[in-house]
Length: 111
Length: 115
Image (cartoon, rainbow over all chains, first blue to last red; front, side):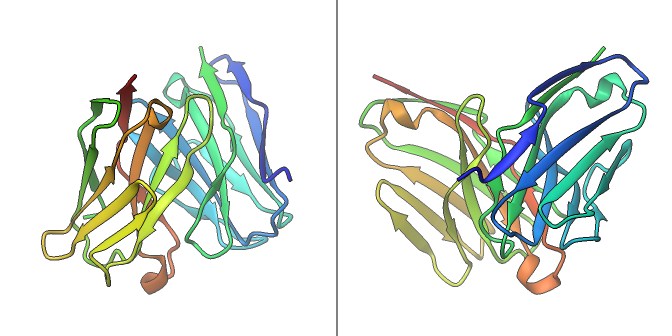
C-alpha cells in the first residue's frame, strides 16, 4: 500500500531554474496539500486542493504554482527557483480534513 | 489571528519520565486539534487528536489535555521511551465550520528521551 508518494526525493537547482514536484496518492482522497518545512518554522501551507480541477492558495503561495488535473496527482511547480525556496517539501492528502497522510518529503536546495 | 504557538522548542527527558509539550491558539473558530509525530527523514504522522467538546483524550501513553477557556492544549507522553524521540507538531483546523480545510501547525518540539 503506497499511500502518498513524492518524487523526486532530493533535488539541487540553480537560481532561476524551474522544476516540478509530483505527488501521487492511491487512497482516493479528495483533499491534497503542499507544505514546506523550515527549521524553527514548522509546516507552512503553500497550496491546497479540495478536489480534482481545484486549487487554492495557502499561507506562503508566492513563487509556486500547482495543478490537480487528476484526482490522484497534485503537482507543485517552481517557475524560477530562488535560494529562499530551499526547504523540505511535503505533500499530504486527506479524506475528511481530519487525518492528513504525508509523503516522505522532497529535499530541495537552490544554489 | 491564525497562529498556533508551541513550546518548548526542544525537550530532553529521561526514560520513564513524562514529556509535556504545550500549544496555544488565538482563533476560537478552530474546532480540531491534532498532534503529529515526525521521525527524521519521514513525513509527519497523526498521533492523537481532540475536539473542543472534551477536555482530555487518552490513547495509550499519549494524552491530550484541552483548556478551551485558556485556548491551550498540551500533549503528555507518560513513561517516555527512547523510541518516542522525534519532533512533535501541534496543529489546529477550522475546516468543519468554515470549509477552508486548512491546518495551522505549530513550530515543532524536538523531543529526545535518554536511555
